[in-house]
Amino acid sequence: MRKASATAVFTFVLLGFALPVLAQFIPEEVAERPKWEEFLLNANVVKEEQFGGTEAVTNPYHLTLEWNGIANDALWKNPEGRMKGFIEGWKYEIAAYLFDKYLGLNMVPPTVEKRFHNNLGSCQLWVKAMMTMKDKVEKKIKTPPIKIFNYNRALNLQRFFDNLIGNEDRHQKNYLITEDWRIILIDHSRSFRTGKKWTTELPYGEKNKEGLILKEMSKDMLEKTKALTYEVIKGFVGNNLSEDEINAVLARKDLIIEYINKLVEKNGEANVLY
Image 1 (cartoon, rainbow, N blue to C red):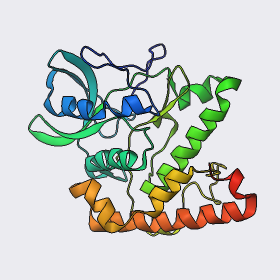
Image 2: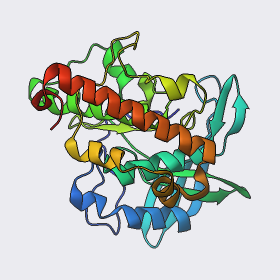
Image 3: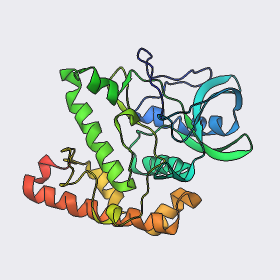
Image 4: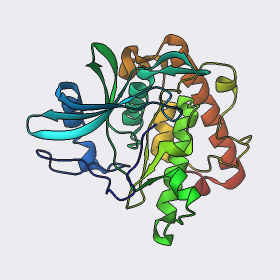
């Protein structure tokens, strides 16, 4: 769980980087990710605050980091195993980011493995957003008409992504919305499920009880999904996923392709693929 600022623009404190990092990154911002990964790996912790209570099940730390004249906040966590009824894993945070990079989704902040308090965990670049999805719903904030098309497209990208990674925990606080109405996705420690429920049915498929259904997909994203094999996934996630977890992703890959093919047949390719 992460708190969002109600007034802050979605930017990072930059003392040495050329561009702000935004959700749904543009190419110039994507090019900065290796620098942010290096920053997260090497930066010193100058301040720390641990979250707790019912809204922060994994007890993450809000860190302030500094390195080579660059300062920025980050979120560090190391949950592993069953916690309050859910299987949690800090490596899933890293794997989700690596999938985001492979797919070109560009909605997950840079995330690396980092040692803190002599323990290994995931460390993710901190995001300051205008609001969470929960804020938007509870305060009945309407999406500006000029932003609706891109906003809805981003939601479809999220549904595709969570279908693929088997994310069990996409609640409203895990969508951050920026002042320019981009969406960034956080908190993936309950992803990469392997049970039958997660390998035979898509969470955002036809049976979604809330009507949150995947309706469209980019052609590029579909081709990258089709190209996924065990070897390809292992190549970019390394030891962050087990053999069973990778095979579960591949099962969901097949379900997604089948689902999209049915949508195309029903609605026409021009109304599904872009």
